[in-house]
Length: 180
Image 1 (cartoon, rainbow, N blue to C red):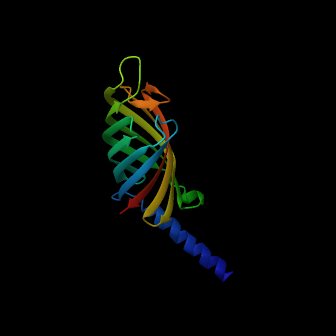
Image 2 (image 1 turned 135 degrees about the horizontal axis):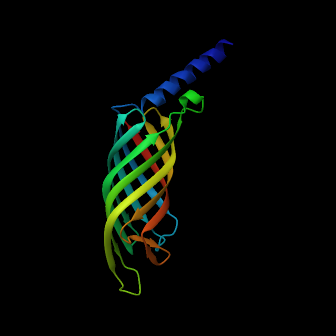
Image 3 (image 1 turned 90 degrees about the vertical axis):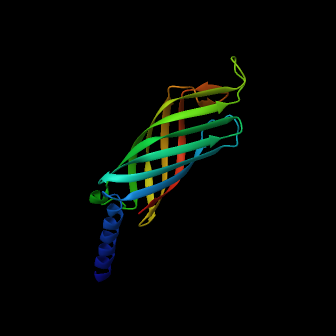
C-alpha cells in the first residue's frame, strides 16, 4: 500500500511539472521539419522555427518563419502564430501528452520551376493562413516532441502539388520543442 501511495504521489508531482510549463511567462523554441504528402521532387528540405511566449496559461503567440527547397520548388514564409494547449491533467490522462490547436498568418513567397502552360518558371507570393492541430509528447520537464497536421491556404499559388500549382497545402509536421 505504501508503494502505491508513493507512486501516486510521484505521478501527481509529474502532472504539476508538465502543466507548469504551459503557464503565463513561459517561452518556447520550436524547430520542425515536414514530410510533404505530394512534393514534386521526392527530395524535400523543409524547416520551420517558432518562438512562442505564453501570454496566458495554455495560450502562446509569437513569430514563425519557414523555408522549403526541393530543387524545383523554393518557398519561404514569415509571420505570426498562436497556439492553444489543452490541459488534460485534471482529467487524469497521461500528463506527458498535451493536445494543441494553432493558427498562423504570414507573408509567403515561392519560386517554382515547373513546366506549366504559362511559363517554365513562376514566382508568386501572397498572404498565407494556416491551421494546425496536433499533440506534444513531453520527454522531460522542458523538452517535447510534437506531431501535427497542418493545412495552409494562400492568396498566391505557391504550393507545388503533383505537377500543378495550387494555393492550398496539407502536411504532417514533426518537431522538437524546448520550454524555458
